[in-house]
Image 1 (cartoon, one colour):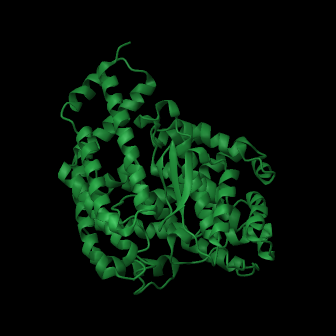
Image 2 (image 1 turned 60 degrees about the horizontal axis):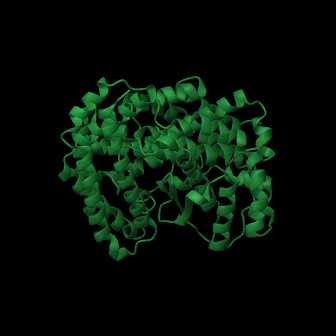
Image 3 (image 1 turned 60 degrees about the vertical axis):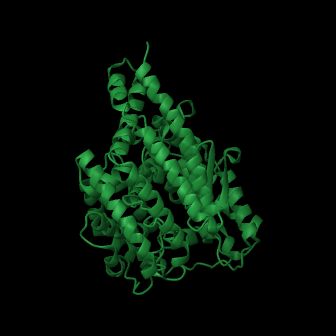
Length: 496
C-alpha cells in the first residue's frame, strides 16, 4: 500500500526527534555542567531551537497532510502513531511562536536565578522572575484550553498526562486526603517503638558514586547508552540512545543519593527500552508522565524498599562504605521505610510523599486558574503543610515553595503525576504477585528478571501505542484502582 501523506509526516517526526535530541543534551548540560556565565547564551540558543522546532510543528501545510493521511490505508500501529502526531500538532498550533520564545527565556532565567535564590532563602528576589513564568503559564493554559475544550489547568496537565481530567484527579486525591493523615499518624506511632541505628558518616562522595554505579548495574542499567552525573535537582533526561541521569550527594548521609539514583534508574530503563524500531516516532514515547513515574517508583519504592531487595543492597553498601552495624539488612530496611514528617518532597518517604503532592496540586491549580497570585503562595504553603503534615514552615522559603525546580521551569500540571505514578506502581506489583506467586521470595534470591521482564513486556515496549487507560487495562486487567496503593502502604507499614 502507498501512504505518501503518512510518510511525509513520519519524515518530519524523525527530523524533530533529532532536534529534540540536541535540545535534551543541551538542557542536561545546562543543569549538570554549564558554568554560571553561560546561562544567557544557553537560554538564547535553546530559545532558537524551540523556535525552529515550533515552526516545523506548525507548518501551514501540515493540516492538509494530516487530513490526507487520515484517508490512507494504515496499519493499527500507523494509525496509533498518527493519533499521537495529531495530538502534538494540535498542542503546538495552539501556541504562537512569540509565546514559545517568551517561555524559554522566562523559565531559563527563573531556573538559573533560583539556583542561588533558594539557598539564600530569597523569596522576594525569586518573585521578580517567577511572575513572568506564571504569566506565560496562564497564557499557555488559556490557549490550550481554547483548543482542547477543557479547563485551563487541565489543559496544562494534558501535556504530561493525556486524557486525565481534573475531575478524576480531584476524586482520587480527595479520597487520599481523607485517609492519608490518619495513616501517617498510625505508622509514626507504631515505628516509634521500633529501634533503628543511624549510619555513621562521613561518606565520601566518590565512594557513594561507586555504590550508585554498582546498584545501577544490579538494576540492569545499560552504561553503554547512558551515564550518571550530579545536578542541583536529580532528574533523568537525554534520549533513549543516550540517557542522562543525575543525583546529588551529601557526605553526612548516603541513602538520599542512593535511592534517588534507584528512582532515576527506573526512568532510565524505561527510556532505554522504548520500542527501538519506531524510536523517532511519537508512538515510541513514554505514554505519560504518571506512567513514567510508575517506573521510577516501581524501582525506588516497590522494589528498592522491598526487604528482599534490601538484602541484596546491604553487601554492596558494606563493600563501598565499610562495615558498621547500621548496614545490617534488617536495619537498612527499617531506615528505608522510616516514616517521618519532613519539609522536603524529594527526601520524603512513600507514606508522607503524597501529602507534598496534594499541597502542590492545590496551589498550582489555583495559581493557573487565577484564583491566587504568586505572592499568595507562602501563606497557603504554610497552612497546607500544617494541615497535612503538622509542620511549621513560616519564613522558611528555601525548604518551602523554593525547594522544587518545577515552578521556576514552568512545569505546571506535572505534580499530580508523582502520586498517580505511585498508584500505578502499586497496581503493577499487585498484578505481578497475582500472576507470579513466588515473586517476593524470588526477589530475595536476587531473581529480578521477572520484574524487569514484566515491565518491559507490559509497559516499556508499548510506548504510546495505547491510551493511558487502555495501557493500564492491558497491563493489569483493570483501570487505575487507587485501592492498590492504600493496600500496599497498609501491608508494608501496618501489617504484623
